[in-house]
Length: 394
Image 1 (cartoon, rainbow, N blue to C red):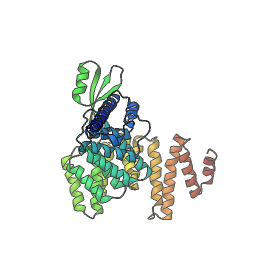
Image 2 (tube, helix red, strand yellow):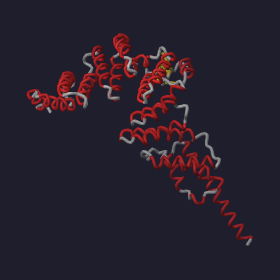
Image 3 (cartoon, one colour):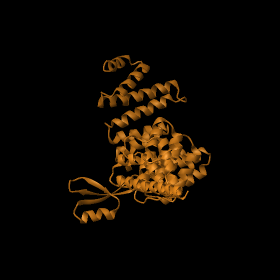
Image 4 (cartoon, rainbow, N blue to C red):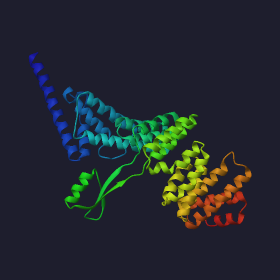
């Protein structure tokens, strides 16, 4: 009996040594970037025979295996969930890998974000919102994710959820403005740096020149405008006005807040102040893209009156702005399609749409989408000659 027990013990010990060697081989393969080899080594281990001592390491590399470090194909949501579960189990077993955990977490984060974007594109905003919520919960310091979650909730009419998220962003002082530190390398290419210190060190080392700092645009105006609308939608104009005034007092120089002032005042029903803001607005802006972005946001919210105003302002600065011409035409077209529009008004709006779409067609005569829309409008308005002319080009 003693002899048999010794044999069994030796067999178990030998198996444990073999597993230890395999884990080491996997680790070295990952360190060298030989991910296919690491996967092959991992798949050679029988999970049922893994010793307790190496169970945590096994679960960690099991998660890595599900994430397909070789990049052979995009990881499915199902495999991503399995990877998260395995990594969580490895932590429960007391395993940590300071060298590879950040890499794996970053891989999971980026893939989950990509899947969320795919879900948005396919119309599955519920799953997209769930995934973005998870991304924020995994790193609460990443307020960009909270902002994305708020936008998803807003666009899918989950207004209470959106209000909660936007309010949280305002409480946390989020604006979305980021400072990027850049310098030009010896090949003349502008590169980004993680911090001003790293950039300045590179300049001192004479590997880079022309150090500079660039700031991204603020999201504050968008957040405030939507929060104001959400409170008004709940029939709480007092709270809506308070949100706007607090933002103005806290961020008096925020450009995005200044740009949404007319829309905020319109939402609050402050018509005299709204008219005054409109009159004073155009003189402060010289970049047509600012109006283009505002117009696009207005169309997304089906605020066609504001969209028309913004795109017209853009065209005042750049008359041959193809983007503005097409979208201004679209804003008139959508206004004509509203149920509240009379037949006479619809004809007028469609005529306006044609006038701007024709200018867009002159700039890009090859655009089949514009041509098809023109044909539809010409036919509706009885412009048979013009319709036939466009059809002959299609």
